[in-house]
Length: 528
Image (cartoon, rainbow, N blue to C red):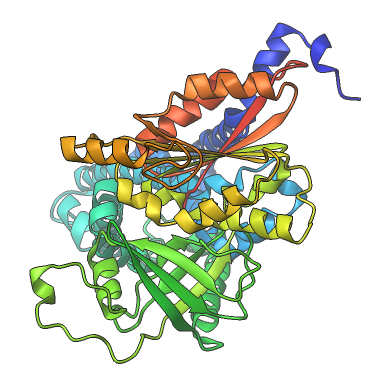
């Protein structure tokens, strides 16, 4: 039987407050780290006491146990790393009872953590084998075998070098600075995972460490036993993406060029059944047949099409926008003719995200930074359709929509939608707050003052709610919300720049209160 909040001790309240946003992910991270440590100790002990490898143990000493135990953990981590990017599987699992105990929306973060684990244990494994190679050379003499030959020319040696180079390139190109500015480099370099896994499958098949009795190869390579399940699921995912992307036929039905280098693309794909807050992957074979880019949906499930708003910031988005007929005034566009037709695109998805859970809370706080507002356009449209159709919004009773932008023209992207919702007068259901962080020039200030003379509508957004200049004070906002909605749970959903995310996440933890009249703020961030 649940313990009433008012009867809980201070320590228990602190524990429950911690578990709102941090507990589950830290528990799973801790279990993963603990599993590696235990597995290393068990592997080390087994090899240190096994009579089968007594000869090699006498030559190599602790290097044998360290190298083999680290290899076991690399196999264990590689068994998990592909599962973390199987998006169809994760989208399905989000809808099961396991969503209560597993933070599925942290799959990419976990994928990165596992990658760090593979790098660490690969270093341990390699360092131990460097020691082993020199130990072998010292024991048998340079005339028989050299450490250099073992390291570079032997089967385990050259496959290990190939694996290490592939791992280095994958990890360095996945750094955020590279991934954000040069997605193509990240995308294609990350496909070195084929070489990495292929080399790892070969790496243990040369019977380097031989047993003294019985099967001298001690059962042969074992990596495949760990990896095969995730590999099969991952291949199925990739095949599904290609089939679903091509069939049935998908085509672009409408293109709208918005201010601030944003392009709205409407796509007809009847087989794509979506939910508010989800995202899709788009591939345009004419631009790049192998690149798939994620975009959050801005359309509602009630609309006969799916739409995305794309900010033109990289090579792919710029080339895609120009192929759609958009022009931005660059010198490379001189002499470009309007396209005679719109390109064929492939769509994969939709996939679940944190924002999909917005209707599971009594109060929802939607915070978008710049183009990060896109998932909330889908949610707001869905709310509008449900109100128009007198549909139940289940738990949801109040929505706070906070849009932060440094560019005043950005507020035009969804101006019609916001004005329409505002005109519906939803009995205080929706609270819109726009924050403009850029400074104005003197002539722009005069225009705002003149256009805002009647005070009926905001001069910048055209909405009844006024634009607030500067950054939002989340401490003040959450204090206000806790006073207005005591004893309730709020879902706080964010999409946008990392600095804002960090500030908002911190505010959610600070103001969460699991007491009887407190308010818990569950933080969710778009992460794909």
